[in-house]
Amino acid sequence: MLKDLSAIVTGSTSGIGLGIAEALAQAGAKVMLNGFGEASQIEQLRARIEAEAGVRIAYSAADMAQAEQVRRMVSEAEQQFGTVDILVNNAGIQFIAPVDEFPDEKWSQILAINLTSNFLAIKAALPGMKRRNRGRIVNIASAHGLIASPFKSAYVAAKHGTIGLTKTVALEVAETAITCNAVCPGYVHTPLLEGQIKEQARAHRMSEQQVVKDVILASQPNKRFIQPQELAALVLFLCSDSAASITGAALPMDGGWTAR
Ligand code: NAD
Image (tube, rainbow, N blue to C red):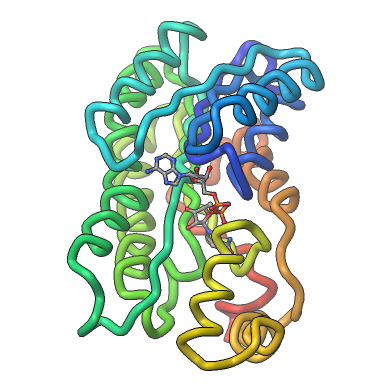
């Protein structure tokens, strides 16, 4: 389906991004992985996906908090693959604290990684997409891009911002064959969520099992975690020709959370 196309998936050494990178590769796209981790483990991951999917898989260690590194990641992908046809802005972090205790540096870091890096990567990849009149941009926002929860001021602000950015880019390129959409997951069991469960357990003085049942899945009506593969299937569909008319959308996959 994506044969001869090339993709960047930021934050794809783990969790949702890894699931998306694997799905795009299985569909035939060359993929540039990105994210942190131990060098030998990342190389194993890269080589495994390359062997399983039979497509070229590259890796960029770019830090999404550093503007110059975001730009360099896009130009390296263009040099190595020839094009960047698909950009999935997925890298993200979380920090939980009441707003009046929220550390300034955590606010800046979350805004930089979860929002500004999306703007910078889109800005760098869009000229090539426009030249070829072909492109798919998918921003991994969150249910927290649509609604808020206490103690997540920076995350909620960044994810609402991501949806605003998505809509604006979609309108700017609406007459081209480029689409820009946001996906809004509910709770997905990944390392990012593991950290949150621990932090919430401390904040609420509860056991981790209680946090999962009474805090986390309490807001998700289907009472189960979403699997990264389910999100990857949605992203794959958005990258297909069948999704050519879906643009500027913020698509929830949240087990009914935002239906309340
Ligand atoms: P994760 O922690 O499993 O993975 C995050 C990835 O981002 C990792 O590869 C990590 O190395 C990378 N990363 C972190 N900081 C980076 C930086 N500065 N530069 C480059 N890479 C960086 O998290 P996840 O749960 O898979 O989250 C992925 C995305 O999905 C995030 O944007 C997150 O906000 C969003 N999301 C997650 C959930 C959930 O429940 N897990 C729900 C809604 C939205």
